[in-house]
Length: 118
Image (cartoon, rainbow, N blue to C red; front, side):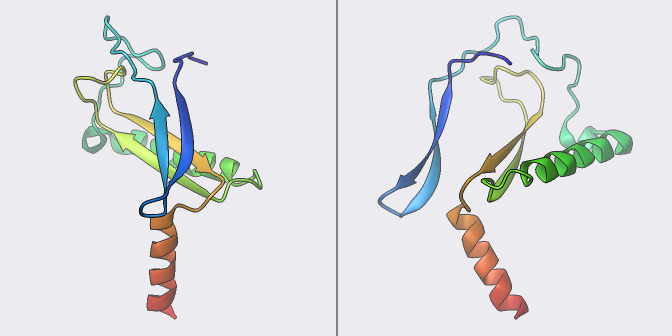
């Protein structure tokens, strides 16, 4: 595991009453430009060959299924980010977050979907 000294918390914003992610600390850019996880993978999402795209989506599916085995996980979020000049990681990357709550945006979408398809 890469020790970054960062900590992320889930807090309820009292003004709008929404759950938000709060990240403490600011990551420093990697000076040498090397990715600590997978050097050489610099293809953007739309430039991925079909077989790599299929493997990536399959990995998402497997990881989400694994997260749902934990009874505390109520929702998940898959984030795909393209590199920006301030990013520590020098290529597009994904993160998968499992959360013990259902985010307000997702809860509202589910209510609207149930109403629409009822």
